[in-house]
Length: 511
Image 1 (tube, helix red, strand yellow):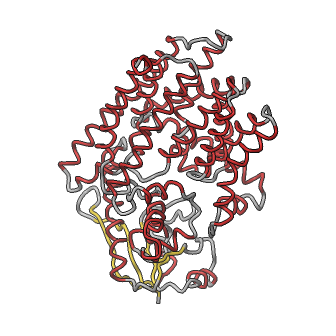
Image 2 (tube, one colour):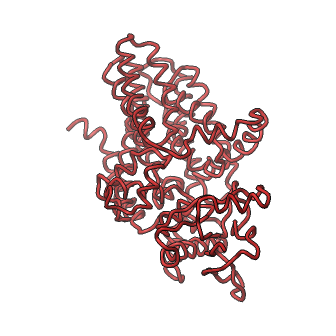
């Protein structure tokens, strides 16, 4: 009872946050087309139904490069075919992750009030609640990674071997949730250097075996290591310089994006980011497991060739990052192991974050209410709806909705045994329920382009107005088809003036 009273603040906070988050995330959509959600949902469907499930989903799951634990969780919770249940299960992982965050903060010397305040601030970040609209593994990964960091900190202080074994198991679970979990091996290996050999071997096996078994048994068409090897196989140094030139600004903006919806306040976020890095650097010198994990994770992100995902990738580090300046100041001013974290740095940190949060809440609440007065009330379930520019937000949601409707129509026009060429095969697989393959790159010259286009035997191609780094041309591969274009259907939306229409997607038959 005494322990419960001591932690009454976090219990009350979680009892408040849980229903708010469940209401917020209760929707029937993927939240954003650019995510990996459709792949996870197809994997969950396959794990839930086995040979009786959709054959396209089964094929996608069999050769997917994504780790299995998140879709397995959805399948075990009977959420594979129920969007509301998907979001409920996913959001539940966040609530447990917040509890793990609180536990780590208290372990590091913060009072219950300080730790509860930081948990509240992290839960209130736009990056945290916008992720609740999507079908992603971040919430589950955050839970495993924070539990692993907490137990590594316990082991560093007490040498309790069960804490090390627990950390090893959570690291395995984190890596089976997201591949970036390998960054947790850095603090684990450091801990093993000070552990008796037999116990160190047991912990190492506990962390590695589940991951090795999965990757040895699973058949992925293209793994992450294959992708990295292909990217850096030429002039690796030149590629690395180019990658860093794109990734460093992306990480900077991504960090700010987790705190802001109004980009005018970016300087505050940038200063906070520098303080977080300074604190993490100081604590890395002192061999703190959380700081070492932050460093190894950031090192991987620097070479990871997906700068457009920087905000999402960084979000799982944000709770640890925002605590670094406060903990570093505490450790700098008082070297005793039992020192309590001073309150003033916590208050300053909270004030700076709150300064960024208030405009974000104002904008988000206005957009949430305004969606009811539009032709697309479901707009409130899209991440893009909460962008700073209202016209651009409307445009993005309209385009995504139109593309989803078009892809769902594909099953009516493409025979079950046929396939579709598209720049986002995962979306065609999920919404269109047809097999899909990437088109050749635009740099491939004729006639090789046409040969590669037909290599899979597909008789259809689907173009969408969105573009990415690999296929920067909208509606690709339609511009390369020329007179060979035989339109089956297309979809448009009105432009800003309402007098013209913008093409969002098109299905064409390959002659």
